Amino acid sequence: MEQRILGSQGLAVSAIGYGAMGTAVGYGPSDDTESIAAIRAAHDLGVTHFDTAEMYGWGVGEQLLGAALAPIRDQVTIATKFGFTPAYAPNSQPDHVRTVVDNSLRNLGVDHIDVLYQHVHDPAVPVEDVVGVMKEYVDAGKVRFLGLSNTTPDNVRLAHEVHPISVVQTEYSIFARESEAFFPVLEELGIGLVAYSPLARGFLSGAVKPRSEYGPHDFRQRIPWWAPESYDANVAIVDRLTALAAEKGATLAQLAIAWLLAQKDYIVPIPGSRNASRVAANIASADVVLTGADLARIAEIAPAGGVVAGR
Ligand SMILES: NC(=O)c1ccc[n+]([C@@H]2O[C@H](COP(=O)([O-])OP(=O)(O)OC[C@H]3O[C@@H](n4cnc5c(N)ncnc54)[C@H](OP(=O)(O)O)[C@@H]3O)[C@@H](O)[C@H]2O)c1
Image 1 (cartoon, rainbow, N blue to C red):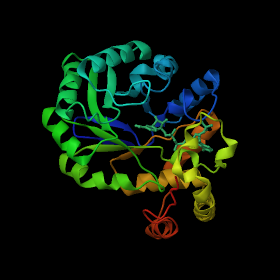
Image 2: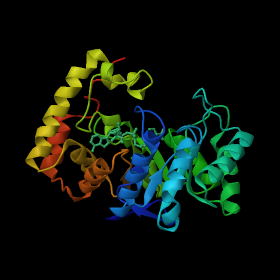
Image 3: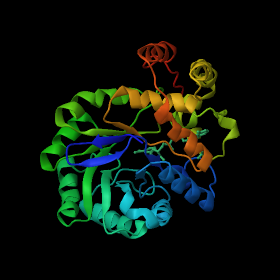
């Protein structure tokens, strides 16, 4: 698979990565054996970048990913994140960061983390102080590259003054375009973008269902695209995108991932799937070539801000 460069510090990864959140939380029950097979299938098909977080099962997701990757640890890059409390409030207090990062190293079973992200900006702690703590781990050889997620362009600028930031991770898909506001700062400072929820949390997967068909703890109970007053309009957009994908011999999910790859050469989408054959289908997006005319049709079907986000 094509390699992409994230940042200016030497981080090179496969153009499509793997997001491991669903192996622990978010989208209903998962089977560990099947998840590990999905992770290994991703590597077999060329994926070298794997993404997790403390928050994905409070260590459980990191343990599963670490176990799956242990035999191939030296062939992959692993990213993890700190910065939430169990009530999903931000916490980047220095002592908390140190505790979580030490736990992440243990949970993953690694002597270094390739990319360490602050998961969410904490208004109680200046980002410069947070990056100062993250830098301690770089200096100790326990972290290779630094990243920020769920932040602002201004915070990226402030953080980068303390230690180079290699990658920003934001939600980015045909349905979620707000991340484009980061492009100028990323290009000015030479920082890569990891696109999370590239399939719009499954809305662009080809398998979207109404909210009532997901479990009570499924994250999609709270995602506005699924709000009853918005759902049908968004499905109508998806139907038109699916028809365009079919004209190109691709699936909707493949069109959605290929669209991200076509936006900027420093973007790496990290679709998540707990199923090996769906992982393989997602990776095949790397072979879908979108022309300028295709991109224009996608822009017409789903213009930025044109997706309906209900309550
Ligand atoms: N930084 C952050 O705050 C943040 C937030 C959210 C996510 N992330 C990262 O981004 C990664 C990806 O995002 P995500 O998992 O939220 O959403 P996503 O990749 O946009 O979509 C995942 C959903 O789509 C389904 N799916 C995936 N491929 C499919 C296919 N080919 N056909 C049918 N269904 C398919 C998955 O189900 P199955 O598993 O059943 O296939 C799952 O329900 C996460 O794993 C995580 O690493 C980061």
